[in-house]
Structures are given as structure tokens and as C-alpha cells.
Length: 334
Image (cartoon, rainbow, N blue to C red; front, side):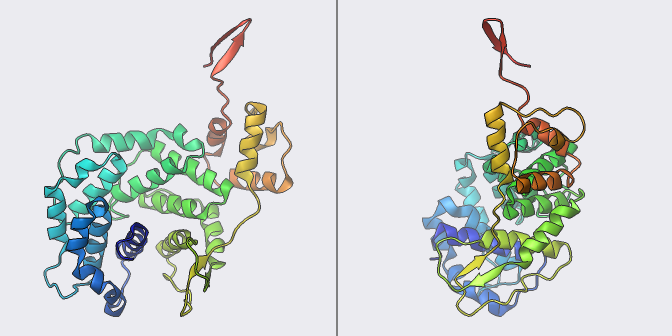
């Protein structure tokens, strides 16, 4: 189980939330990791492709006070080994390079071959138009870049106003999709940037979190991650962390599901009409298609949650055609 990549990912995320938010975790609770920690060197050597998970878990366990019978700690030695093996050079993604650098810097290890990394990360974040269209991979990369650059809220990530706008675009899409997991990450990232977090987004997430339930059924996948992100955001805003009563035989975490699919309806409408026209004022008042009442209500609600909605909507509706007809010819649009 402890060699399973999903186990590694979920435990790395949970420990990271506990460590970065300064939670007081008892030694009894951390003792669950005794066996894993005792053999972590062998696991890392056999599964070097998962080195970032192993380093993250080891670093956070030790930061939380875990020793596992090894008074000096193992994380620094493991990080030096990963650096000597040049494992970061096997990464294709700048996001993964940024995470590896952040982990290594926690024990003052400098990785090589990262020239120009910050410039590329900021260029990606500043390309706001990318984030006005549904693209979950790009959206989660945006929030995680800010997590890494800010050292999870410990320092100013130095982002631009364009990057803040990019976060708002992702937040708007998340609200339209009612994607609590991604919206919570956006709100956390905005907070780490020192930017104002839309109050309506936080209120919606608080209501969503309050309806979470632990189930006893055994499932392959549940709502663990969105629960973790929503609870993390709540405690960043001053609420107690992880206060739900967990049953003895917990098998799943269940979060509310919603019937309104505003994002899907809007996307279909735009595709069918080759773009929706917005002429001045609030874009949602100029839709030229018929939408279900609940979808329109959600659209109007979301429009009032962010100062960047009108610019988002203009880009979301793809109003600049790729090709235009000029007589019997087609030419590129503006």
C-alpha cells in the first residue's frame, strides 16, 4: 500500500496541509508512519520516479516533530541523494521542477539545470487568456506554481496583476462548474498572493464543506481531495481544522453534488452559435440564446462575484473569429 502512487500522493498532500498551516499533530498520530519511515531509503531507491512524494513526506514528518527513532532525521540525506542522482533532470514539466526545487531548498540543497525556470513560470501565469477556457491541467498548474513560489504562504510569490486575473478566470470557471476542489485551490492561491479573495466564493465553499459526510462504504475514489482543500481554506480563514467526527470504519468522504451544469450549457450554446455577442454592460444580459433558468441564475450570480467577469466572458465566448469571409475568400480574423 505505501508503495502505491495514490497513497504517496494523498499522504504527501495531507501532511503538507498539516505542516504548512502549523497544525499540532500528536506523536501517536504520526506513529502511523513508523514502518514507512523506517524503510523510506529502500523505497526511494526502488521508486526514484516518485522522489518528490518521498521527499515531501519525509520533510513534513520531520517538520511536524516525527523522528521515527532516527534522531538526526533522514530528509536532508534523502534530498542530497536525489540531487546527486540528478533526478530533477528527468522532469519534462516546469511545474515538477519548481516543486523539486522547493523541496530541496527546505534543507538548503541547490539543484542544477534550472536556469530560466522562474521566468517561464511567470510567463505561463501571466497569459490570462489561457485560463478563460476550461483546461483543468493548466488551472491546477497555475495554483500549484503559486503554492511552490510562495512556500505555501510563507513568502511573497511576486506575481503580477495578470497572474491574479488568471486566478480569477479559473475561479469563475470553477464557480460555473461548481468545482469546489479547484475553487478552493484558487482561493488559497489568492490568499498566498496577498490578493483579496472573493467573499462569495468563500461563503459558497463554507456551505459546501458543511455538508460533507464520512461514509463506511469502500470505494476506489471519493471526494477526499476536495474535502482536504475546502478544510484547508477554512482553517486559513480561522476555522478549526478537521473537526468532523470520523467513524471507526470510514471508507469514503462524500461531498455534495449539484444538478446545475452552467458551464456545460454555456459551452454548448457558444459552440452552436459560433460565439455569443456581448454589447456593453453586463455580458449576461445580452445572451442571444435560451438558457435554463437555473443556469442563467447561476451565471448572474457568478458575474457578481469577480471584478474580472466581463473580461473573462469576452474571452470565454471566443469573439475573435479565426477565419472571416471576404467575398469568395477566407482571411484570418483579427
